Image 1 (tube, protein in one colour):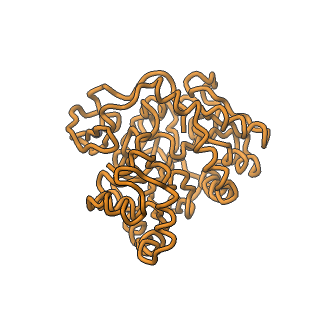
Image 2 (cartoon, rainbow, N blue to C red; image 1 turned 60 degrees about the horizontal axis):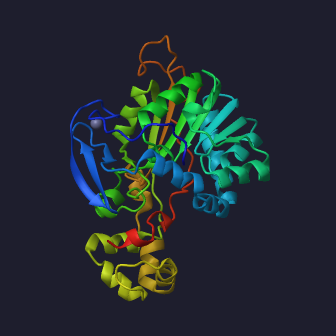
Image 3 (tube, rainbow, N blue to C red; image 1 turned 180 degrees about the vertical axis):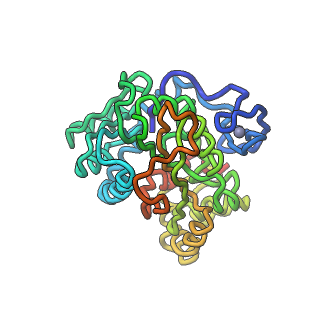
Length: 356
Ligand SMILES: [Zn+2]
């Protein structure tokens, strides 16, 4: 996360996804108001923190680096699977990960013959990747990185786009630095997922204080097309293990005080350790968090909580994307199994915000 340029989230009345005008109030959560486009259902935070506040937060943040370090080994394999999706379309070349955290994806890319560069605004996190693995990681917002036009073959934006102020502007900048025919891989929470539908504003995987944009498969497709890409594949993933399930369900049912009582912390506060003990030690909460969720069914229905999109940059001369394919292999393949889920911990729903 943490990779945008100057400028804030759209006060613009124009929807970045469909270009339509007109937002209506959607819901309130975590001390923020959210609004939805009347045209396409894309949602955004209506009262986001200022760009300066957000930049300050990411510059000092170490937390996502700690999470990424805990998952480094597992994520190496998962990013390798994502890179295989790139390699179905293009040979290894110059690779950019926007919001690369420690640089696990860059290590995986280098191992597979790519020449990787990362952008990560958190100084301590970026420094770790440079020192530990000798990676090239810039702490500069993408538009200020000075990358040359058409200088990358592949760009990964993994659980980052939803954090940025101007997603269409960033995708257009990516379209500039990608070579024609280059590949873009996006992953974001799916706000048209079964969990989002059941949990509503308590969909903790997607509704957090850091996520300024809520995409569905169709609104993400529209956004990517507007930026000049041809969408190759869209799919969703769901996860059976979800430590937030009891927390989110209790929120949905209005049982925050009951949960506090069961876990033994004061109402209105949240003690993560006590909650983890509760879902680990008791059979029913443990079952709900590890076994109950019909992940395979949700994924099969295209209603998984993780949304992945693969797209190719349309050559600038071809004049409009959907007919242009230029595909060297079959387009019926699938995206990798079990992609990284660095947003998947319950830490996203931070302390005092948890129990509203
Ligand atoms: Zn729209």
